[in-house]
Length: 332
Image (cartoon, rainbow, N blue to C red; front, side, top):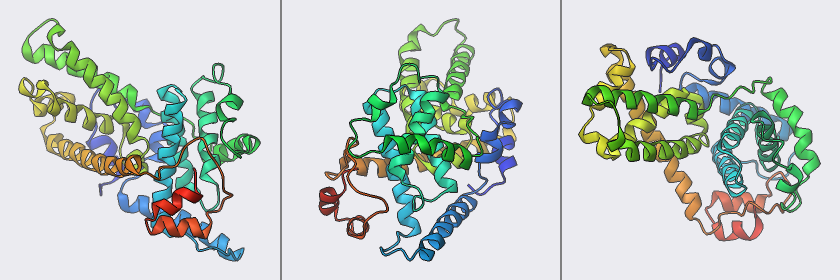
């Protein structure tokens, strides 16, 4: 998406969802990036700064390439997601921890900070931000992870917060999902001229559940998180779900989106094109994610065995796609 951030936030605005106070949040002001080129530039600058530090220290191993770093960030984001799922933490903790993780590695390189520590630090911070600290005992949550320095996990909390300039306001995608579903229900009633939606309640509930799951996966992707607003991301999910259900036979997607835009036909095709771009990018990310899921060498989230930085033998096997050897040496 090569447009100015004002265009991204305002001209593609979904009326009734993107409120002024939201646009004034740190989420919008500091963490939305106006183009993929600018995002890549920021990521490359972060990486190059870390490489310079390693070169000064005369680091003895081969330094991962920029593309390797981007791959590893997505990999550990996926691992974070899997760990939260396996421990039944509530979705808001998962979403917040993923956003914190990706924000941190936008400004700092994993060549500087061990992602196997940072991912758990982001989880501990998220349990506090989402008011789950009363029901989650962090020691019990993390004690099964072999060789994990839990003290280090807590020590990194202040560093993560400092790197993020204490921008801890996370606009959850679920908030936009619930608003969009309500608007969809109103549109169904209006377009079909009915008072209730009993006939379609099963489809609506299915869409809500699927949208919530898709939104959580979207937060694993740095590019989706930084390039698009929460309403844009969730609208792309809802529109795709409409296409994939029987609602597509009774509703006009264009008319629904035009309703969201308060009849602004000038931006209709622009917004539809944007949501399709998001869907295409999301599907690409799903392919990457599915590849990790299907790999026999998928590391287990309950083991930590090697010191950081990444040993050359393991890194070489990662780069060469030799998953069998990776599996023998790297269990997280």
